[in-house]
Image (cartoon, rainbow, N blue to C red; front, side, top):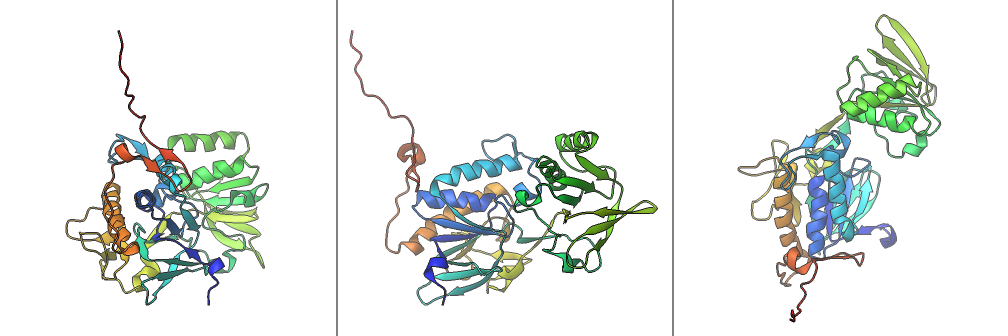
Length: 356
C-alpha cells in the first residue's frame, strides 16, 4: 500500500501544464481549490514553451500580440498565488477510482497522486520526441542520449552535440554555450527555421568559437560500448567523427493520446468527448478541457480552453464540496486571496468631505 507521506494529494489533478492547465489553477484557486499538475515535458507551458516560445499569438483577449513564451510566464505569474504543485518530466499512466470517488493516478515513473477531480488539459496529447533514424538508438537513451534538457547544469563544462534546426535547438545551443559547454550544432540544412535573433546569436557565438556549427549534415551513427562516446556525422561526401559526452537530438515532438486512451473515456478521432455544460467526460469526476476534447462546434483555440476551464472549475467545486453553495465573486470587487497569504485588490475608495 502506498505510504501517505509519498503520495501527492490535491483537490484537482491537472494532466497537462500548458496554458489551459495553468489557467485552471487560477480559476480553481478563486474557489479555494488546490491543484497539482502532471506533464511529460520538463517545464510548464506545453507547446508554447517547448516548440514555439518566440512565436507571436494574436488571438488572446487583451493582448494584440504576445509571444507564446511570455504567455506562459504570465500564466505562471497569475497562478503563483495559489501555489500549484508540479510533477514534470513524467507521463500520467494509470488511473483507479475508489468507492469514495477518489482517483489515484500513477505516472510512468511511479509517482502517485490522489484527487477527487481530474482535469485532462493535455493539449494534443502526451508529446513524444521525434527520434532520429539511427541503428541501436534505444541502447543509448539515458546513457548520454537525451531528447530534452531537464537540468542544464548537467552539461556545464561538458561536450554536447545538439541536432536540429528550430527554435529549441538554437536556444539550447546558446544557453549551453553560455555555461561553458563545448557545443556542436548539427543541422541537415544550411538554413535554420527559428527566431531571427536566435539565428544571429548562434552566428555570433560561432564567430567567437563558442559554438561549432556543422551544416548541411546528419548524424548517422553513435559510438560507445556503454554510453555515448562519439558520433559519426555525414557531411556531403565525407564522414566526420566528433567525440562527445552527450547527444541531444531536438527534432520536435509528436503528439499522442498515450495511456489516457486506455482510461475508459469515450474517444472520437483521437480526442475525448465531453458535454458542453461543464466539459465532463463519460466518467464522472474526469473533465477534459482545451485541445484534447471534442464536442459539436469545438474550436481548438487557447481562449476556448480558458472558457472551458472556468466552467469546469464550478462543477469541480460541487464534487469536492457537495452541498456547499458557491457564490460568484468578481475579482474587481472581492480581490484575490492567495494560498501563500498574499492579496491583490483594487485601491479602496476614500470617503472624505471637502471643506471650504
